[in-house]
Length: 356
Image (cartoon, rainbow, N blue to C red; front, side, top):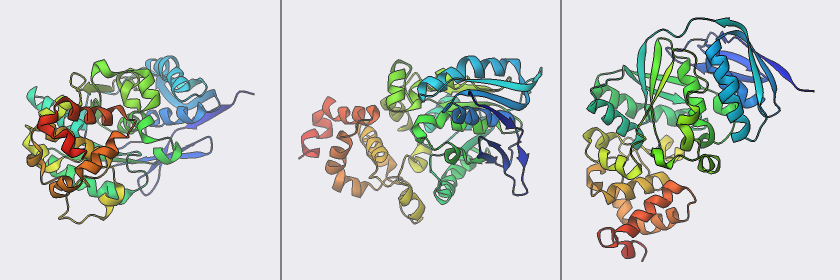
């Protein structure tokens, strides 16, 4: 028998969490500007439902356009990408309105892509109304790490004289798939819950020519972000994709001329380091794959000294040979591309010395 499940409208708890339940799993979201929007929960419910297929009845109103996107675009994608089954979504009512025009937010993590987007928007005289950071799985369930990293993002926002909004969710607990396989869905679903926001700027991870479905299934959803990021948005909500004209090295070259990045670039994935480091230690551990990759790319641009505050360069000089050998064993295309930079110019990068 094909299961049919109901997604009820969320309720707001005394501690500020907006919660609902689907298929016995609690879904929760909170933030200063979050509202109990059913649209924020529908994508996560569909991820859960696709394990068995069937139908989802949303006990709230959705627009006809949103229903069409969910049924014709998002549901077939989820079924194929996550090797599940297609689901049919219905709603208690059809609403004719849309999210009214409101403010804009730049989703910002202080990584290379984020700083590239910030720099590009600035060059176009576009000022987002706020920076937005979301806890939806990048730090697993390590709230202390997230809070530490928010200090850096708030410092960037203070320099720009714009506010920071944060959204906390349990989406990574409710649907415990690897973050790289579903981060776009989690993040944009969370952003939908923000009251008074009608558009977000979302940084690309890859150049347009690098987009590929087979790479997305094998490595990371970001390889097809623009294909799916609009497929579950409510009417009137816009997601603007920024940066797909540049590859990783081109973005790195750009931020090497962006002084704000020199003091605030944060690419580290070592959560234990982030949670325990002292205030005098660099933001980045310098040892995880993402740190190694970024240091290679920055050094290829001849700008590593500019980032001395955020990387422990003495440690990098001592251990980079071993670190690069570790990165060379990675199957991630971005990691392997970074190592190829060393092959392209062996005299400038000292390729043989690095591997000696």
